[in-house]
Image (cartoon, rainbow, N blue to C red; front, side):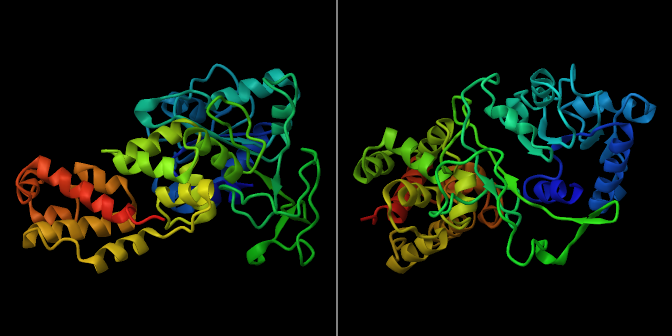
Length: 379
């Protein structure tokens, strides 16, 4: 379990505040040690990276205030049994790990409530639950805030963030409690790693990832289908989307609005390809267009040699911005802060760079023209 939690943190943010709920104090201590071993580098750099915070541990209890303080980076991971299930306002907690049996709906709600604090100043707008005891089946209980839902459970070879779509041959029905068949090869763990509990070899049988939409309801369809439906509620056709996209002064604002409506762009990039632009993800998933990578779009612009009307230095700035787009995406084009970082900072201060174009209005026109070249040749 410690290995899976560490894998998730490494794939997201190793300094995300994390609470691990264990069966009892002894379990919490063994879990602390396992997480220390799995994160030996960070635990060696600061022994407070992982701490046990339980009623009998004065050292851990003394760190409780630091754990819930948004300004304090340590402790990062807290293992506990009961102490932190209620009354703890962990505003920046982003990961709740369940490795204990939960006896009631009330206890379940109290525990997951540790992650439902919003703190926009620190970017805490959602949280993740990793459940090793199937407690999250309670989400599908009518007594929880909604009707039962279908849950897709992924196989052991999938990393914890996020899953692929349902295979085409998988039935649409199914039970949250259904167990998937063992993986090929007798269920051997990928990479040759084997796990033992009390000298008995065990294996990862399944993993499950659930999403909430913008209204807080569980998504019961594949992420791609949900995205297609959400986008098409706003844009009835590719032409309608392209009209709005091409006319927008700030294209990033369109993406942010879709995110607000529940489109998971980062998760889609994990599934479809991290090198694709958000624009291509939307066109591909919602309107069945073949996607191009950011580098492919940038290379097409370079081949058209569209910067000849600018001076030598201004041309070099646009070429550097084009490569920034290929590396990091659209936001790097539309933010003036990009001019403060390498290699753009080598051309001077943001004010000096803007002057190369004859002032900010002309600079913004040049960026708009660059975006038109990137996106203006979609069928």
